[in-house]
Amino acid sequence: MSLPVSPQGDLTVALARDPYRTLSQTALRVGADAFRGKLLLSDTVFLTGRDMAEQFYTGGFATVSPTGSGKILGFIGGNDTDAETQQTERQRRRALLTDAIAPEKREALIGRVEAGLKALSERAPNEIVLRDEMVRVLTRATLEWAGLTLSEGEAEKVAEDLITRSGHAIPTSLRKVGAAPSQQRLESWAATLIGEIRANTREVTRDGLADQVASYYTAEMLPPDRKEAGTEFLNHLNAITGVATYFTFMAHACATRENGHRDMSERPHSFVQEVRRYYPAVPFVRARTSKDVEIAGATVEAGTRVVLDLYGINHDARLWDHPAMFRPSRFDNLTIDPYALLAQGAGDEVTGNPCPGLDLTTDLMLAFGEWFSGLTYEMPRQNLDLAMSEMPALPKSGVVLQNLRAA
Image (cartoon, rainbow, N blue to C red; front, side, top):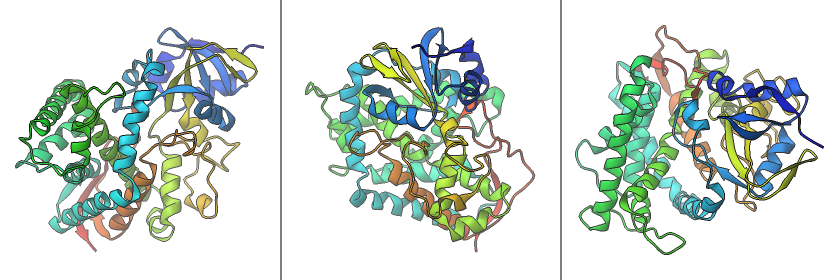
């Protein structure tokens, strides 16, 4: 038995234009949840549907996590050729973050974020771009929680580079111009930071995240060089500040849905889960088969690239009633199937495949919702369309708010 083949052949251009809907639409055309095609001219197996998601996360694949943000071509073209050989090391580094955001430790981070949100509303700004302001709040909170003693303006400079790199604070024509220098500055800052911690010239909290990354040894008992360790620290920083994306989606839901504010206040947990399901954060994830595997009755050879359609599964009418509707009440009494809601990955603690930051993300979204529900503000005319060719597909305006005040 063989898998059906995409009639488009290479899906690179189609995914660049519409990364969130192309795979589910193609699956409907071929009448199967698993099909073959090409991605950047390489043979690829594409998967959608709940059962394919379970196999993807439990079938011995060497997964490649999405990182960064911006144009989709940079994401689908990432290097996954050595995914299997890096899997053990990736799991060890993942465990470092899992330990750092364990329940007894993440409360301190949530508290710092809540303090930053309160300070923002007390400042009563005349106008903010919500997405960018949330990156600033999360950056300062994360760096302080990671155990760093910050120099004057340090958190602000890091936050501005994070904002510029992802491009939502600057005109479209300038995004590519600004992104590369900001990434270079972030990498240089992080490498210098690791060097200072190792040389004991930077004051840090012992066993805080920054100290743990700087003190980390690989499975071969070798310390990564300071650039590599700095990149690892940036990855952790990106993971937490990236929650600004979900904050922005929550505000967008309030702005565009008749009962958005009421649902955020009256059913906060359901509202958070529906934001995670409905909004386009990550379109898909990649992996390579670590051995010959059977998918939908067909043999897929070891080393084959496999792509799982996250957004399509979150909008699969076989799993969700009226999936195109934003309806938080669907989660009021629902036991969530981990292979049906895939905003940040899936699986369970036994397989080791869930996103380690899932609980933290949920807690931060709940904290943001409580804060946002207590605000008064004005919303000027703006473009709230989602930028569906980018990752994540944020509102094009970033959500502009004026005359922000605590109620």
